[in-house]
Amino acid sequence: MQELNNLLKELGISKVKLSRYLGVSRQMVYNYLELKTLDEWPKDKKMRLFNLLGIKDNDEFKNIKVDIDYILKIEKKLQEQENDTLKTDFSAYDFKDLNKKQQQLLGEILDILKEMLAEDNNNTSYTAIKYLYHFLQMYNDSKEIKYFLAFLAKTHGFIQPREFVFNEEEQTTFEGIMFQAMNLFTNGGASRSKIVEVHNRFVEEMEAKREEKLSRTQELNTLKVQALKELNYTEINADNATEVFEKIAEIQSRKID
Image (cartoon, rainbow, N blue to C red; front, side, top):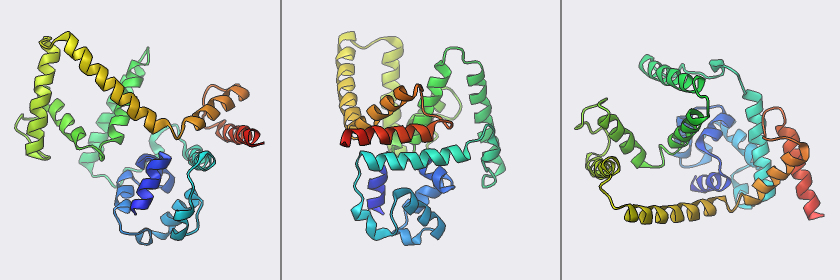
């Protein structure tokens, strides 16, 4: 199963994308990936995964070569799935597995998000919500996410400051560091030159990390831009996805020729 996890990371397939393709919840995907082998998966989900990856059985995993052509094929399948399931309302989402308390919480969150977007005149709320989306994508991969959420809830008076639902020792350390940092930010007690120096190191490390992450997909991004330009489109959407991916394949073949 580790081999599959590594492959999904290499392809940039998030748990959200995989859950949509398989037609299950994100939590169910996590449950599947915690199983020892793919043979323990429901047969229909396993076959759907094989279809996405273009293989027939477990033995073919070792034959998968992740290159630009393979990434294109995977992205096209995922995009086609998105096109087939795209809805303009929430009737496409099934909340029956959630209890009333969970449904109420989700409804309140959606109401806030809808209100933020409806009043968004300069895309700042859209951008903030997009960051929130990335924040949630990292939830199960970074324990600090939970601690940060708890810290914000405490500093704004929503929960008791001594409430520790997660790891109390780690939360205490995290909250102490964050409290000190926020005081420095609010009161301006830190040296401006030192802050700039630290931030420059932060930028350098993040740029290096992002460059490493994007290196494999850089060629694909270039092909996408070229395809959109040749087709006079500005973005890939449900209406033009198939045409764009076909154009990408055409451009790639021209390079080979």
